[in-house]
Structure formats: structure tokens, C-alpha cells
Length: 263
Ligand SMILES: NC(=O)C1=CN([C@@H]2O[C@H](COP(=O)(O)OP(=O)(O)OC[C@H]3O[C@@H](n4cnc5c(N)ncnc54)[C@H](O)[C@@H]3O)[C@@H](O)[C@H]2O)C=CC1
Ligand SMILES: O=C(O)[C@@H]1CCC=N1
Image (cartoon, rainbow, N blue to C red; front, side):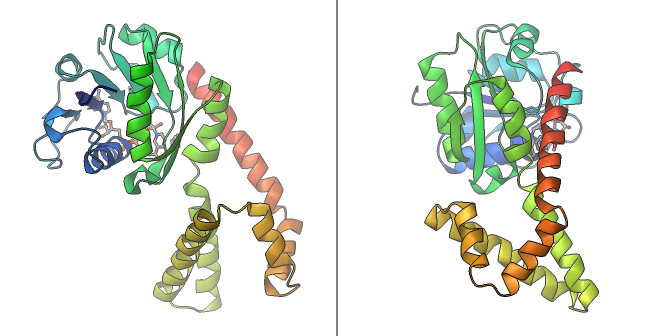
């Protein structure tokens, strides 16, 4: 990878673009003076030293690497020529070939980070077009290693699947936490105590899994082995269709990612 490159983030005022910018700056992957971000309406007051612009073509012209971080439905109306440049998309659904064709480049990388990029804990699968160079791949690895873990995967079908599994992933433990919290409040706990309790369970579990690199099945099995409260809860949740609900949800996300690419 070249020691420094100029990065332009289209939609940098948004959630994911801002998270990637913040993490890449903190890790020293990009310098503030080499970073440009675009916004659509109000100019954000973030990232001192970086350039904010509402002119996407000006952003592209000054950048070596252009990251597309607008919502998929806003992408068709995005006018931006990136002839011969590296374009990195974080958009759900949109295919490598379509991105290259629209922006006039054959160096395209389709990535799918998640919201935990904000705290350097994203999982980011990615796939590159045929004319993407080794230097380009090094840029992608540097940005998304700073954001967490990254893997180059074998097909866009894998990206479509992972869009649900890991791109949407942080929403699923949050969904579980919301259901747990609702139950706790219905039981009579104060919302403050319930929130602290449930959030601590989630962050503690994440730390444990990370430290032990544990297989989730082993963890569940270890709890089941007590034949106590956890087994009573898990077996009841499973009888109520827990595993089936998860599988159906992931299938819906996979189909939605494919459909978004065809829209
Ligand atoms: N938020 C998440 O957890 C994840 C999001 N993604 C993808 O990241 C992309 C961005 O998502 P978010 O950051 O969550 O959405 P967001 O709505 O927070 O950010 C998008 C930003 O793009 C701006 N924008 C739209 N059109 C523009 C234009 N022509 N020029 C300049 N700015 C423009 C919007 O004003 C907004 O600030 C989406 O394509 C989404 O599929 C992928 C994985 C996870
Ligand atoms: O829900 C979405 O469409 C985006 C992509 C993955 C996470 N958020």
C-alpha cells in the first residue's frame, strides 16, 4: 500500500461513512488532510483538518480512493465519474459490475461492514473486481483491519448472505436484548436496572466469546450441562421456535440483499 493515499467518502455525513472515517483516522490509516467527505444538506462539524464538500465530483477528483456510503436507494441518482480510480462500496445489494459501469472504473471493491466499525469491531467481508490491484487490496485491508476483522470472500453470493449475517448482525443481539428488557420491565424491574443488566450481559458475552474464540455451540452445551435455569430457558426458547426464527430471518435478509441488487 502506498504510505498515504487520499480517501473520499461519499455520504461521509452518515452513520457508516462517519464511523469508517473516525476509525481510519484514529488508526492512522488516513491523515485528516488526505480525507474528504461529502454531505447532502447540512455541513457536519466533525473531523477537523478534513475537507467537507457537497460536490461529489470535486471529492472524486481529489481522491485516490473513493468510498460510496450512501443508501442504496440514493445511489442511482449519484453523479460521479471515477475513471480508473479505486472505488470501494459499502452499500448493501449493489453489484461490483454495476458500480464499475456507473462510475467508469474497473477497480471496484464491494464490502459489507457493520455498525461496530464505530468501535473498531466490525466484521467486513469484501470482494474485488478482476482489475483490482494488490495495492488496492492492501488499501482495503488497511481500512477494514482498522475497523475490526476483514475477509476477502469468493463470490458476491457470499456477500449477499453475509449482508444479513454480519452486516445486519449487530441488530440481532440488540433484538434479543430488547426482548429480554421488555420481559424484565414487565416483571417489575425498573427500566434503568433492566437496561444496565441486559447491556452488561451483552457486552460481557461479547468479551468472553472474543477472549476464548469459543464455538457458540460449545458455550451453549456447557450451560445446558448444568441442567439448571439456563437449560430450562434455552430448551423452552428452542421449543418455541428460536432456531427456526433465526434461520428464517437470515434467509429474508439474504433474499432482500439479492433483490436490492436487481432493483
Ligand atoms: N449502518 C449500517 O449498519 C450499515 C450500512 N451499510 C450500508 O452503508 C450505506 C450507508 O448507510 P448509513 O451510513 O447507515 O446511512 P445514512 O443514511 O446514515 O448515511 C447516508 C448518508 O449519505 C448522504 N447522501 C445521500 N445521497 C448523497 C449524495 N448524493 N451526496 C452526498 N451525500 C449523500 C445522506 O445525506 C446520509 O448522510 C448504505 O448503503 C448501507 O446499505 C452497510 C452495512 C452496515
Ligand atoms: O439494513 C440494511 O440494509 C443495512 C445493510 C446492512 C446493515 N444495514
